[in-house]
Amino acid sequence: MELGLAGRRALVTGAGKGIGRSTVQALHAAGVRVVAVSRTRADLDSLVQECPGVETLCVDLADWEATERALGSVGPIDLLVNNAAVALLQPFLEVTKEACDTSFHVNLRAVIQVSQIVAKGMIARGAPGAIVNVSSQASQRALNHHAVYCSTKGALDMLTKTMALELGPHKIRVNAVNPTVVMTAMGRANWSDPHKAKVMLDRIPLGKFAEVENVVDAILFLLSDRSGMTTGSTMPVDGGFMAH
Image 1 (cartoon, rainbow, N blue to C red):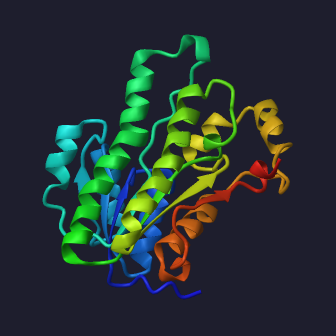
Image 2: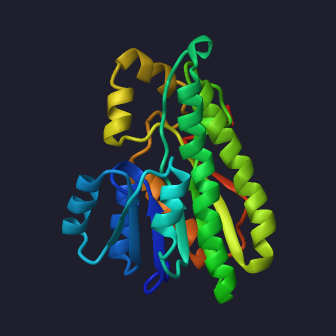
């Protein structure tokens, strides 16, 4: 399916690793001019070597003022992927203030801030746009030791819907993708315990975890005009996990 994204300009957060990095690579291959945002300079440097021409911004999105400065002159953006996130796992009774603050600052507040900056630019130019928020099956199903993470992703799903409601009149679509466990380096590390993995896999009708390209394909579809009538949706990429 030809997605017709060539020539547009996209901003991707959490671009250094995992889903974000693969999204940058796929957009770059599709002829999109990409601005890659990460807090890790070494990841951005290696990404530019792989994808010459990608612009980079090194900033910690948990820092509101630094983010404001970094994105202040980012220029016109047509497509936005809010992928940056942290997963700080603690038993509920041991959840700390620091885990709460960091998780909500990165997983929710930064999405609000970055999307405001990008959307205001779209509206000022009178340009249509598409925003994809990378959520999780954890937004809709409780998981042990994931109290804060599940909460941030549940909030992100509702943020996606309210953004879609308010930005729709400006021809800006906003959707979320909600993957199950994804076989990124982080995913492999967190789910390498066979017993832990089996408990999850037994609840997935397709019997497997997601590959990164499964998620990237969903993101590209939601960014493209092929999903031109879709906004405010939360698209599962979960092998049927949430059908239970």
